[in-house]
Length: 82
Length: 228
Image 1: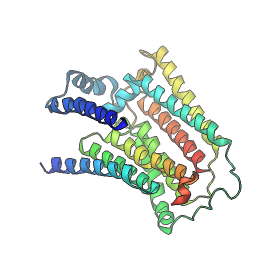
Image 2: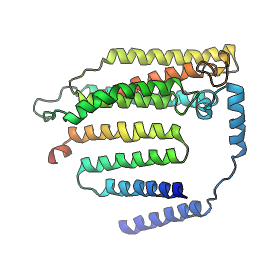
Image 3: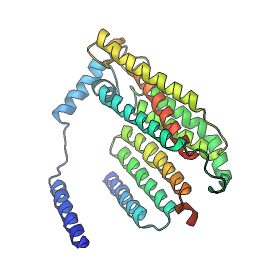
Image 4: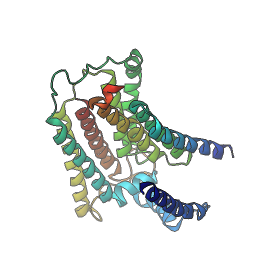
């Protein structure tokens, strides 16, 4: 019961950070929020007994892709307005 | 007019997903296919981790395809970004030095991250993880390194050679499977060994290690291309 509640909370976290990633004005903040959605997804995979997928999601979704986007933001003109 | 179409599309998606969500019923027992894999992987391959056993042996060709896709991404990123390696002076702001927290944190976390990545790679047949996941963990260690020390230079030639060698050996092991065992990428070319031992499960640890090296090198090159 407690675990189900926790899973639901984590999944709500995925949705909230996903919506934030779309609505936030600052590109950097939006990107961090999108990485947070991946991190919540990774935690939910662990809770749902899929540690293999969770590892890949945490490393690639939350780590690498966020970094690549942040670099892209910094290198394009959009980053200069912040 | 655009809004009307958007509303129609949203409603259509809603109908589709409502059907999925309403038809959901929790499975209380594994399906026939899952049962078959759960029994066959430990008995046939000798791998305690069923997921890695499936990924590397039964679905070995798919994994090779995934790595090939990653290789093509790395190659195209290199092709697109290498031309603009030195942008016009003054167009890029001087990067802020990394904060003290990142620098000191990296000194503590980096060795552990690399060690954990190596552990995940070589223990793929025993515990959760495998070559792909471990390679990604090592590459996120490289990300941290690059963030903490912006001046660090990654040797692209070394990474490319390592990655190509790992790829060639991976395919060679696969072809060996054609002659010594049941087919391409069959892991029975090496003895099965004792179940649960570090050296066991045929060629799975070897393939997993090559996969991990290849993935880590490719992702590191991609990261470094984006950095400058």
